Length: 155
Length: 305
Image 1: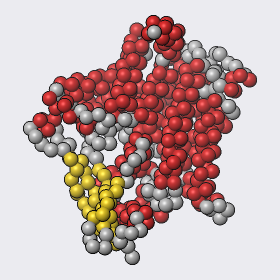
Image 2: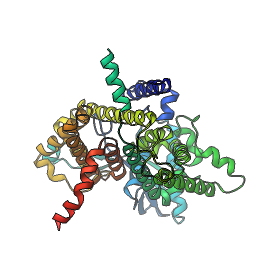
Image 3: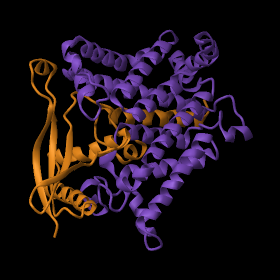
Image 4: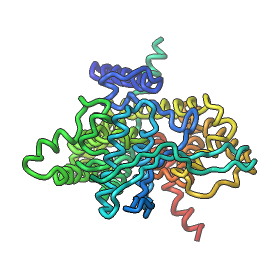
């Protein structure tokens, strides 16, 4: 084997070691971050969590809800998945209160800009309750539950 | 010892064709291009100044701020043109480089540019990334140094090469081993959760609104179906690194993996993720299987009519 080929195989073994390190989630070094060898592949595992959505109730001057809009209305699957990832962050316990509030406020601002006739918007964070198969067989209901609300008023 | 060294050398350097790498290049760049085309109408929502994550909020959500982001280039250009116009221009270059990579036209430059721009977008709106982006990222890195244009490319028209170079051979083996790690990791991490043994994981994967394509609520009366599907998923993924290598089991493993990913595409609506996984196994391991399909396809079509 030529020296160049030997070095090539050595590099491949090093890269493979980084792939294994990433899969075992033993931290990530700069090489792994750049090459994508830092990833683990535990998709949908070991459990599958729940889903979060954000709804915006547009409120008129009398205080009644005139319309409800969602961040995922009419999007193709590829976008729904991406928005889903962003929305799930709102229920991330590691997210700071400031970040949560700032994100919610920026979305509320965008909704208020889109519907200038509404002076107020109520943002609802909801999670999907999916019972186990046995629970569903015994009549437990599946559906959305509101876990947090935030109200934003136009200045 | 000498025998071991001979086998080791044979393993790394005995790839017999440059076509699998060309299949990988074409497959990955085609799915990448599909993704880019799907994202065009929502470009500003995902990466724009006033998108879903507004530029000012990035400080909360970019966990590795030292990594390159499109914002670095776009903000520098903002004194010459509006931010969103610069974003459009950057994305247009990205579309062009993906297309050049697909065609195998100036492949080395196209692969470098595609890797760089994809990496910039990957680091920009990190919250919106999911599995498919990981596979693009790690495959595009291979395209930087593994020769993927020696067959089925415009570059190959000028300088065709049928016998793979050591770099091509080592690169292909590394990609194959990487895939084995991917599947084994996915399988073992599923096997560690009770949900994959009692069918609840499949029930949730089919019933959560994000993935629900059909009404599967009837599954509660046939719990053995999700249970069986869960077991099959774990079995396919954990046995992949063992059964994908021997010729006797390779075709069956490719078929089983294809079935798994077609299921993900149809039943969970994860089209691009399912497609990229299908492409990776078919291209990296399916050389002989694909040849059989191509050879028999006319017969199958004719007999179908």
